[in-house]
Image 1: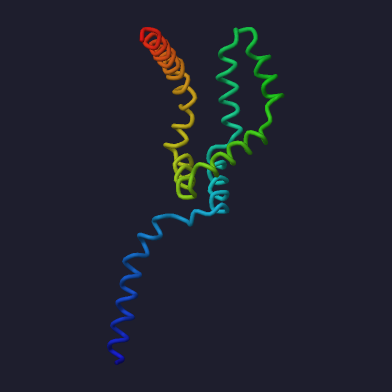
Image 2: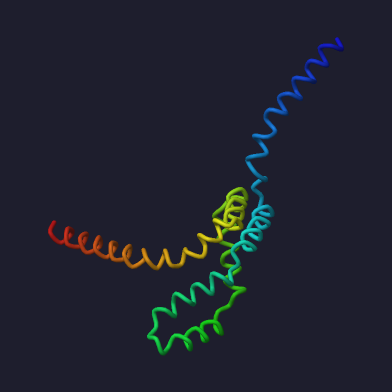
Length: 149
């Protein structure tokens, strides 16, 4: 009887050792608290202050040359960083799992992630007007097709 118990115990241990790494790689349990912790990791890697600074830079670039400094000063004065942080936190907790949030924090905490983040505002500035123009074109075509029917 003892060898059977020993064999069963060994089998249970073997199954655990085979499945444990797979279960662990799935990440932490997706609880509200784990999402909050992961968002804080993400915000440490991608501080909202940097998002705000990028946004102000992008918006002031749209202003005439002589108005940019004053516009930037006023925006920095009027922006509410705590509100931005709360908005980002709530949306991320709502939309992403703890595993996804940890993956974002890992990526944006890496050198490659920081490089992507630095370039992202310029990337959006490059594509946004073109994508908007494409949607405007599509809307006009839809209206024209609707009128012709």
